[in-house]
Length: 119
Image (cartoon, rainbow, N blue to C red):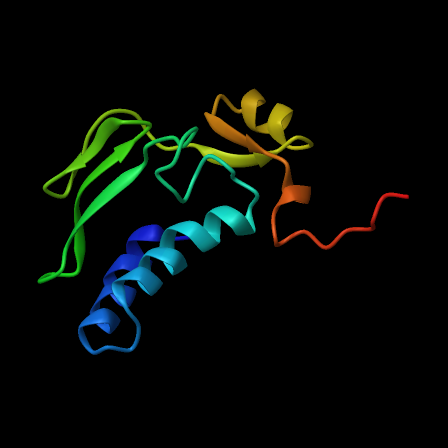
């Protein structure tokens, strides 16, 4: 999910009252986390990764971002290391073999999953 595109295209809709800032936060943070079953993402509660993006509502762009509490974006400049893939339990070995960092998720806990029910 291209998060920066969602910010640049979605944030202006709050100015025109197409939806509230709370709706925008839900659509760009909470809902995607639930979709992929990422229980530690999309909120700032206990156990969350502390991923935060500061947005400029005048230019509709992210200006600062933190991942796991560490700065990764400041004034449009990327800081630190590259991002991570989201990998299922079945895909983690492949992603790791490529030398790419990943966050593991149990897709059966996400709202995207519609597999067979276990009996």
